[in-house]
Length: 99
Image 1 (cartoon, rainbow, N blue to C red):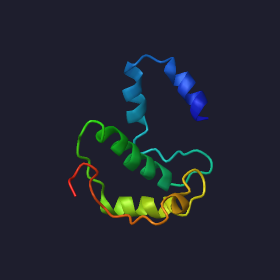
Image 2 (image 1 turned 30 degrees about the horizontal axis):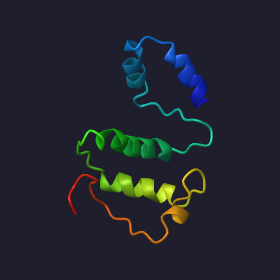
Image 3 (image 1 turned 90 degrees about the vertical axis):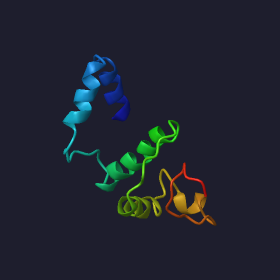
């Protein structure tokens, strides 16, 4: 589904992308098997994907981050967070802030 959508939208003029994104604001549509929490996880994670390489601070809302982490922690696919992060202590913080 994601691939097919990407192929279709790749044919659109670049100016259409912002309109498509703005058109999704407030939408409750989601892919099958996706809960209402996956879009939250995407916004938090991919927002950092953009901010960190640009050396921009993008504070993570504490409650939203805790909710997203609680969703991801028990998931087997695709994250397997419990197994991959076993032994690590997770704390809230800024990836660009000095420790």
